[in-house]
Image (cartoon, rainbow, N blue to C red; front, side):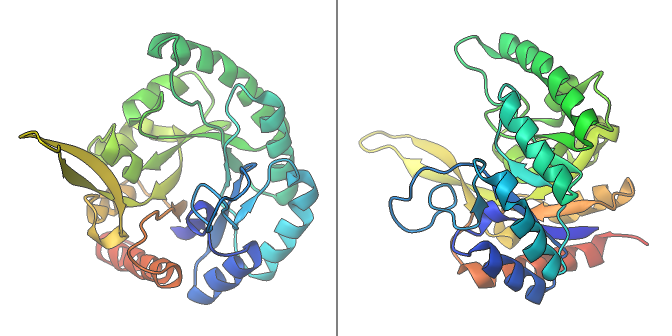
Length: 285
């Protein structure tokens, strides 16, 4: 198994700083975030002013630079962390063309959340759209990935398996994400991997914890999920790695740690140390 970092979680570093530091720490790869951001309004953040994000609008022009700095650092690129949805076909095609030029074999194509039309109608429509996405995948040789994500059409492995039924796993895959599934859609790790079967194409990892918030003036508490350091969240990584080992998974695992308790450099470095510790305990040769 190879370890990468999704650059959404590296907001303070430029791409050059990111590849230099990831290579120094011993990571195997980098998963680039690609999206047009709103102008920054303050300090660099995960979702605003992220310095380690390539704009979608200039992605084609940026491909030579991306390829050059990534190769110079000796890092692989497991996937492109894109945000263009399945109904944004022109953007998806632009991203796939760029990914193909980079030599990246897969990229995220989200299906989004239901709107006023309701879950069932949105689910049906997104599946129709994904027929076009599958054709683009065949054309460019870049597999389209659907991420398991809370408050989306595919928050669980079961929902994703229903969505991708009938699609060719050579062209349409699923990103397993235990951190997102903690918030919504969690299914026992071995079963979730079995449910995805051949459509399992990539793995994202992060961790989270539930936090209580007493309601002012009322005798009750509401709960919300917050991102947590990899070592200290609810997600059971020994269990996940054991399940991945049992199915012979030897692909990429990409970290997107959105906790902030530890400074970025130390956080990223310790994440790699932790993943290697878990792998040593759980993976069989």
